[in-house]
Amino acid sequence: MINGADAPALLAAIDCARAKLGDTPILFLSPDFDAGKVAIAATSPKPAIDKGLKAGDWVKAAAQACGGAGGGRPDTAQAGGKDPSKTREALEAAEAFANGKA
Image (cartoon, rainbow, N blue to C red; front, side, top):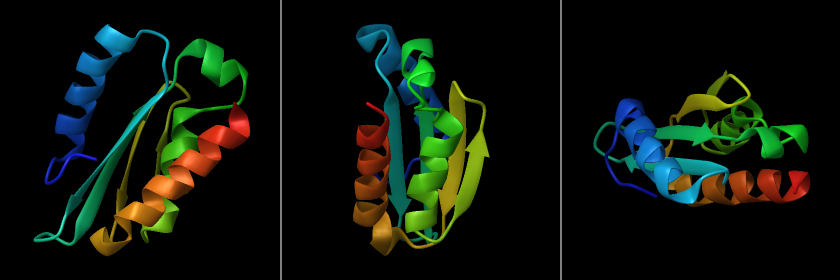
């Protein structure tokens, strides 16, 4: 979790992490309590996509847990939530989704 970051900042963080982690799926969430929203971004490399872990579906699962929506391509996606108090639930939903595809 990264507090107060917007989607472009999360995507930049993903690019940095991907450079270090290689073919590892990555999802970041960022609650912004002042603005009343949650930014979510994810990337999923081809081996994970082949197992069914598509970034668009992954961020959608997280966003739904915090009152939002979103999606994107199988390899990169972003979403938004409307309830930052549910960020922990969104993270748990994202983890459960990813574990179901491993």
